[in-house]
Length: 412
Image 1 (cartoon, rainbow, N blue to C red):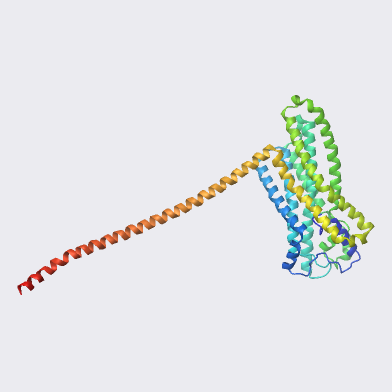
Image 2: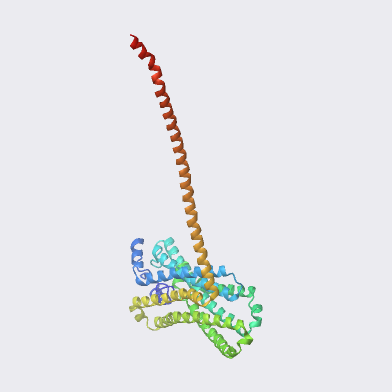
């Protein structure tokens, strides 16, 4: 699901093309060109440039969110979940940037042909980057589910919230999310190790190539986790909305915690809404392609380029979602706005200090130069005065020495 070259569509299509162990399948569009022409061809594609721009913006925005959350230094479990969500969004963008760089530096050449080292390097790097991307997508889903459970406990059991969601349990829950996502992200490696088919094909394909052509792909776990999370979040938020409506007239008994939880709930609804709008198109498209590859493979092969372009632009929506989350934090959460302002002030102060230090350094240099110049001028003026004094003395002494000569001449 990273792009059209690492989507379920292309993997299922590759199974059709290499399932009969054909040597004619080429994965990369420009496998035989040199690096310069390959980079020009890849970066000239509009979908790739849009993805790179969105990815770099998402990395910067989520990095700023992480710094703001660290600067906030609160022990609230919800803040830890937001940090985990920002880290997963940033990992999605980082894996995309690495994928584009890897396509330029290490294109996927012919399967089962070519130098062994090049084939192993290109396919293994491709496999790792793809697995990291799938891990990030799964963690994003699980983080949203964790936010739903956190709000459920905060609103349904506000008096027991800090006991049920203490520091140890919240860190354990987030760690469990990352472990599950990592196992699912690298599940194609685990399945391929246990696949007896590899023993029959290892004389022709290395392990990373076999993982690539395997019928099982780890992207399938994204659809399973997405379905489970969507259903679970729907039940949780429906229950929360019913409770919020019942407590609407009892704000005095709930106090400020209710209003705070309601605002946090609205923020999560914004995050969840952008997530659904950005995820539903690509999930539906990929599910349709999985069916079409099995039912009508000729149509998929005929329209492969167009379908790949559609898949690429739909994946860019995921990057838009990764970019929207930090913006929602900045708009909806007062603590995050204050933390952003504090970071901005700190950056301005550091810049001001750097400017002052440069000015002081320049002033010290100019002062030392002026001192040296004044010292040299003083020495030169003193030497000039001594020279003038000596000349004056010489001029005063010269008539006295010549006076007797004048008297002698007159006498003669």
